Image 1: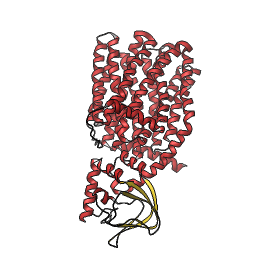
Image 2: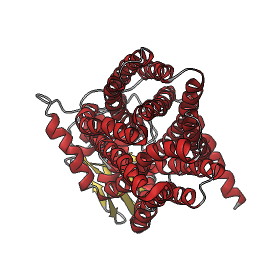
Image 3: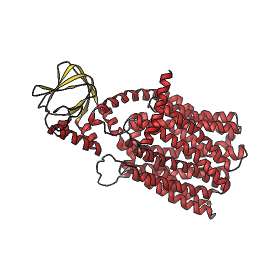
Image 4: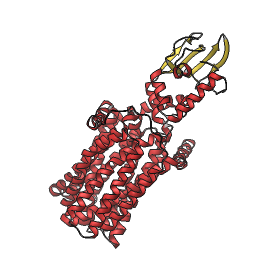
Length: 558
């Protein structure tokens, strides 16, 4: 047991170290953290402006009003993330947000009508809604293994948590000594810095089929179709949406707690919100133990359930200390849930659809935030503060309980897929592929068994597959001469596929030979769709044909 804990702690440390060493991942994570912090700070400043304008009802209406347009924009805007380079989409979103919030800062400083600030908040929120799906779709292309992707999700969770803590805390400080205009100015600066950091990422987009013209309506609909087609993603998103509904309700309930129930100052809205961030930081550090990528679906469920259970506890004991502690637990739950939420769909949905799929989630999430805010306002008026907390708190635990058997099945399926990816990654030609490409190969591959002394293929045959040895051994012979013995992890059969020629050697099983089979179209598309791997594959095959290279897995001809 002690050894297992040591290994998990080592995995946690490696998760953070891998992101620090990878320059592109490091910049992407820091940019996300800055913009995420700015969003929470913006929420605090905007909530104060709205509360001054019309109390809790105005807070709810403004929250819903800024989310509704974002929900409509997200599916279409994120379709661009599957059409053009995702870093460009991120830069554009950050830039639009910086300009909109910067103008809002100037208007707030000049005491312009609040409605003008609200209008700019809609623009800024629409830009932010694009940012997370595009970032989620970008991360897998910066990773090479499922563990590195899980590590990236863990680290992004830490950036999320740090932003949730720092954004409201800085907003509270600025509100205490200045006002909402100063908060908005800080938000604009953070967004501009995020655009600068993303621009410095070394991102190599996968090849996309050229389209005659953009058909954003159809492409946006493809995102919804993909979610419904992949039932596991639909389950994960459904649980997350109940959590986001609760988060929307908290935009109202946090203000009510701070100003009405606890009788505090406006700055206490930021301090209470920072409690969520503090808990999220602790939770994010703990999620380093999940960097091995196991049981993420069930941890997702646990994290979502903590949101509701914490609100129910606040309803039972409405004391300031209890409120702070429970909001911190919500932050822990958020950190736990986000690792699975932003890792598992990436591993289930084809890479070319990731932007649109996460756009669907952001769109539905924006609607869930709006619905949660409006429902909380109605619940406060009809049930009172404690009744509203209890009613909202029941939602996520019930959703998780209903989905638990499916979450277990998702986790078990991922364990099997990880083993397949690890095997394919041992083949020299596949090592340079980014994670989305090799994961898709694992999904599309099949297993075949070749009996002792039977041929896999013969010299002169037409080539239609690439093979990776999963178990047993084989012999490669050319002109009857033994040129290589194949062992688990060895790949063979690439020359006929990449040079469109006949097989140039015979491969025979020695004992029972178990193979992972990759069909021609999938194999060639994966290697040629990623420029670094395409170049390496061409060099590899050319060397084999010319007899100038002696790679570990290669015979002079296969």
